[in-house]
View 1 (cartoon, helix red, strand yellow):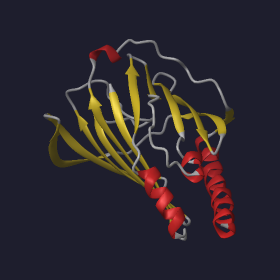
View 2 (cartoon, rainbow, N blue to C red):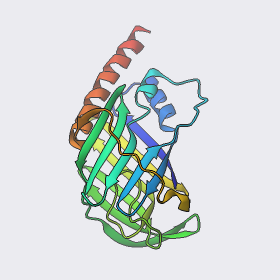
View 3 (cartoon, one colour):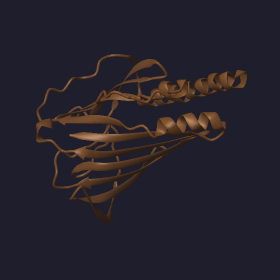
Length: 218
């Protein structure tokens, strides 16, 4: 299975040059493969050639956060192997337990009937569309707990001076995704999910200061 992902970052007080660079970065999709078996799943970034020659330093620094996400449904734990601001990290934490609210609203995605579910989790508003007749009962990143596969998910997070929007859309369903070899992430500085978010916030602050100083000198 394959998802198309858009990660969008917004800074409230950024100048026009920074906003333009972020706009360029926000318009660039990433693609992830989703593999699974009975007790585990693996959500991993697919490397693709980027022909865009106008990458700014801020866009390149922010281009990747979570590369590989592994879930063990038996132990209810997850691991994330990622890279942000040129720092490799390995998140090890317990799988979040989401209190989804299943809505009455329904629609079709690529001819598949899906149902809407929503929740608010740690300052993040999440909207998911799942298909109850498609296994596994999971989806992108470590989202879980719905009675079917998540075909589309949108998350909105607000922090002090920052806003994050992420959209996941399933674009390919392949039965061969089941029982393929799953690799457990193992590289990077070990931290919890909370520590990762604190690191990202601090890294964003430093990148903004460095980039602003460069713009001022130019």
